[in-house]
Image 1 (cartoon, rainbow, N blue to C red):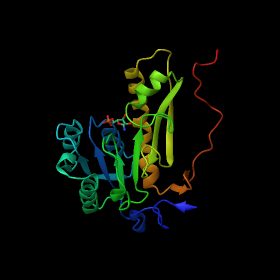
Image 2: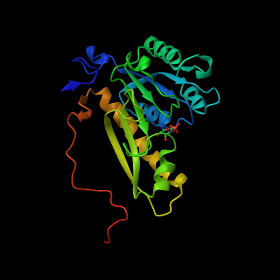
Image 3: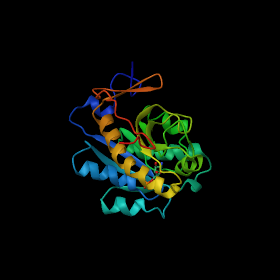
Length: 236
Ligand code: GRF
């Protein structure tokens, strides 16, 4: 068993049981996942605080959402940096300074390099709008709709050095109607993202995640029943 964190404590804040998990969220776009996590914190479903929102696009709507919630915002334009590594080092410096125990990618449109990952080992998570390992990369929902899958979905995973590849924490499956437009699939997947991403953060906050090989063990999880998402549905 290889507990998250690469050592024996699952996370930095666990060393001091009085301190709440501090998270840094990296986002580039609309920020609906940012909002879902912030809302879950406000309503007590997630025991964590958002220490900083880091954004690489000054026009991103997520900035308004963060300011409206009084979250500290840092804008770092990736174009101002010569290399991915220097950009990632600057991100990591801010996250370090904010004493972040978990880095949450929520629609961040830059690939994260080893420069940042080495400074937050097993402490960077991402949400991808597909049932990985299917439909990696951009426009996963469009890829799924064009492929004609009957079930699409979303995945929260630890980030490693390969894109959309790290150990899977939680997935949600969404049935797809025949001929359903990509945008409709996108919206229905997004609704599930807003349920599973805050929960994944809470599992981390509770110290319930460990990584074994490329598998995540969720301490105390319920066994799955024999319920299934079947698409098209069976007749009554
Ligand atoms: C989501 O679909 C997420 O899965 C992907 O980027 C999108 C971000 O949406 N990584 P939002 O900015 O959180 O609304």
